[in-house]
Length: 303
Image (tube, rainbow, N blue to C red; front, side, top):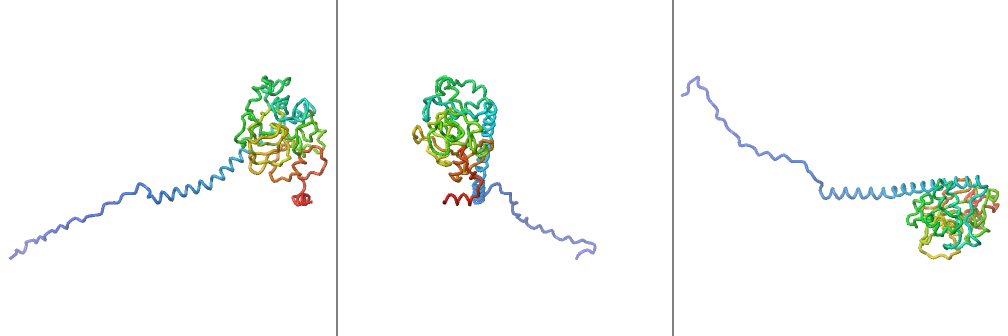
């Protein structure tokens, strides 16, 4: 029998501990599938960006090429102001000029050096002897950046990318040419009856392995537009000594052309051949074809 004041103590039951799951730790790596997806996305982005990047680089090279024609145009005008004539295209005892390292061949570029802020180079040229003479060997071998197009790529180190225009059609360089730079004959503004802004003076060329150098008054620095604007040429192909060749460049779709007025235009390689020839001819006297509409040019071409 229990006592009335006795307190009953309930037994304490201890439940067994519950096994809690271990806390998950964050992952520290990608799965193989995730990694492959990221690589694929990066590859697609690079593929999309590459053409745009290349286009930007070529646009920059084209702008630099154009900027190098600006001082040449200014030097031509300053030369005329000083001497009342433009520099002769090349010098030789007689014509036509053969593109071989034989003869005088001092050219129009060499006469502009003082005005291109290169008096030291100009002072080293001895005009009493051939440009190929040992006396002029050092200056002929110079890699002058003022005549280099950054898009030219592979080229002989001492070559010029820029050429004076001697005639509208393919022919040997001679005294009877109709361009602004001819053999032995200085041309003045009075001889350019078509107007300075309508007459092309300087353009670009594709470089060849047999280039005679930036001071050689041969096809190295004189060209015509007889074969249009070239975008491809085998640099190792052999040419006859009297063959000159046409203008061209590695710029996509055309070349820069410096006009007598100092204006520089980017002429597309789709330009009508008649338009090109008229631009180079200093005295054809015809209405400027490049002022005509494309429809009119097509109509005349068909006729």
